[in-house]
Amino acid sequence: MPLRKPIKVLIIGGVAGGATAAARLRRLNEDAHIIIIERSGFISYANCALPYYIGGVIEEKEELTLQSPQSFWRRFRIEARTDQEAISIERSRKEVRIKDLTTNAEYVENYDYLILSPGAEAIIPPLPGVDSKRILTLRHTEDAFSIREHAEKFGKGSAVVIGGGFVGLESAENLREMGMDVTLIQLTDHVMQPFDDDMASFLHREMRKNGINLRLKTAVTGFEDGEDGFFVLAGDEKFKADFAILSVGVRPDTKIAREAGLETDRRGSIIVDDTMKTSDDYIYAAGDAVSILNRASGTYGMIALAGPANKEGRIAADNIAGLESHYRGSTGASVLKLFSLTAAAVGINEETASAMGMDYDTVFTLQGNHAAYYPGAESIMLKAIYERKTGRILGAQAVGRSGTDKRIDTLSMAVAYGLNADDLASMDMAYAPPYSSAKDPVNIIGYIAGNKLRGILEEFSYKDIPSIDFSREMLIDLRTESETARGMIDGAINIPLDELRDHLDKLDRSKTILVYCRSGQRSYIGARILEGHGFRAKSLSGGYMLYESVMNDRKNR
Image 1 (cartoon, rainbow, N blue to C red):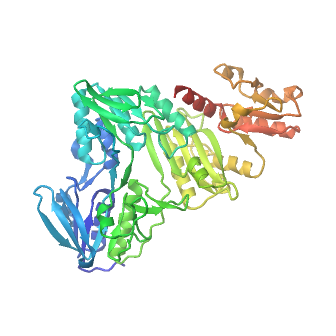
Image 2: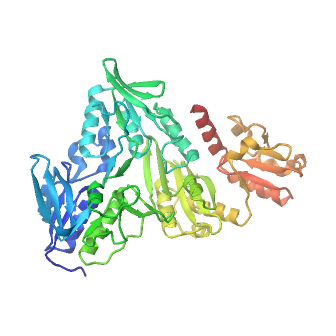
Image 3: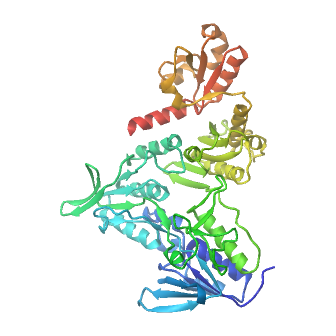
């Protein structure tokens, strides 16, 4: 049981981490004196909802506010002070100096325990013209109000979004839905860095289909704001716009912690133990400003997501209240709505696994979100990264519509608890025709990876296609004639799967037979048929669907 004692707890920062810690602490200790110091004008708000307020999906400002200082006091007897900025910590005296932003007056507040939840701040690159009033960021509620005012002022004008992360894509979508002309500029070769470029190709297609001018591998070099209008500069190019949203990333807002001498990592994130305690026994920290364990990679760093922030705030409160509680780390599970698509990811991607020197492999599968015979079935493209030696699931990415998030949630459990391919294959999933198939896409991932680990299946990648040596390899398209009418891979011979056994005499046994179909399912069957007749065969991972998406994306770049 928690210890009830009349302690004073000062919390710097509200929103997910700080407000959660305050409410949890009150539930555990009715005698505690709890004060929240919040720099903005809102103590607890739905920051993930801000892009949807911009687009009018969420209509009223009041819907963004989860708690006000008044409601916090009425329900929890917690003193929440907005428009107050903590400017320094004197650890030896257990004091925090605070500035009232409405009067500029300063005062000192003491504490028995201090919880830091300052969050992260938007990165503003030092580019020429970056101080223009037409350049906006989206981090706080007030930012959303400003962007919506700009969007409504310019009506069906134009906007440039710089940065292709969650906030950038959600902002671009909502501005586009309002009828604005939107250009999105991304420095790297694909949006959404939790995704690999092959899976991001589906997101690129959705953005282009909905009228967003997507500019990849493009570096913004400055801004011009003059009589001729406002321009975003990218080398020799100029993009004219009514305003721009700068969304190139965030960094931990930890100046006050660093100046107080608390331990931080090289990026400035506050180092905490699994109780959320900092290097000072009387100071805890939570939210985007802390360095936490990535359960997929085993490394520590910043994971700026609302779910982890809420858990961290709760755990900090538990331990201050005398209730032992430990944070296990995060899988980084995340999801994005992008027009008609849902994109979700968990764990590490292939790019990260490669950079870390891991011995890994990947599997793709294209499966229905529920039974094909039940009306409304839609496809989900699912990619998983696993450790070769053990089959342990390291991460996954999915793009589809209904049911996409469900699969990533399941795979998040696999990443968190070290499950392997066989565990996925044997996992019981809730099944009824409107919701899934008897063999869920998560099971299929386990089957495919298990087949590869046992040597039953050998695959080749879309990356291998340009280097096919036709003197030693044959490429067979196993789709039907009507399917191949929309396109084939150069050099392929069409033999529909159901006719494959009748054409074995046309195949060269001295060559490796490379087979593909739309999704990879028929090509796996074809490869097994060929292996059963003495051929060496490989199946195209992800099928023609993935190949076509990646190739079209590269053309459109």
